[in-house]
Image (tube, rainbow, N blue to C red):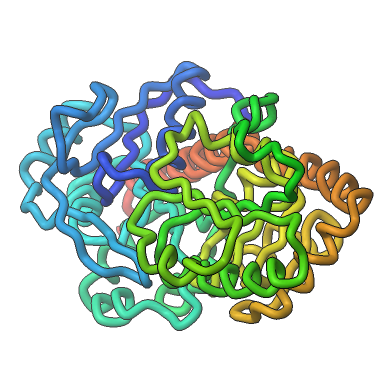
Length: 389
């Protein structure tokens, strides 16, 4: 990390701060490191329950739910131009860092009024492209041009945004809290009965691919009685429960507190991520690696950028429950191979520590501020030159 005097940094999220998600985690982790290093950080975001938001966040607008890539995005459509302008005038930020800067509507107001170095991080990846970018490009092109720096969290995220807005995208990945995930945790007692536990963590969304894992597990359980599937996630899993009503050893653990989640990893023998696509990088993959779990995951761009097949995890074709069942069965039958993958997983996770990620982001800030200073000095020198007339 480069040497720097204290900076004033704005972090802008278009998403409801009262809902958990990867962008919120990303912002909170960066902000925590920047503050630890002596910088001032103010977070701006909409909130569905403003009274529940910590003082570190300035609430901007109320969010509405809209469908987005097989999920739901909670964003604000409140008209906040004056409020944003006042906040920028009051704080005089050096850097305004916008996460998903082309997502309506809050980032647009910041890009309209900010005189700071504007930096955007693009988190999303969608295999089939983005209707939002396609339809709004004539309007958002002007805001895109206001970005002096552009970050993508993965090659998959860079591929999506560059289809619609050409430019240089600095690849700086999501990070993982190695201290939190790397420490020992007490396992879940009821999972310590000698069965081999396969862990899934995710919401009940189609793109998470849980139905393929359920089919794979049904095949596995039909031929061996020493396995259990543990499904952890927030949401309504009733249709999946019905689907597996006749299959034993399937445990659904819904709404597990974040601080309790590593106990499930500590109880598992294999982690499975059967996602079908539209994943930029995947926090659940990073969490599993940091927890030292062997990973079996779909071979989709967002995951293949993290896992090298056969080296620090196993990749299988997406939407192929038979390939998934075969890979899981092979790994469950090979304790020595699982041990090798556990060690490889921890080594791989070290490359994604939040300290390293935050240092790279901060260095990018400094580089852009240096470039801006050079441009301003050059402009001033040109204006000071005597006229040749």
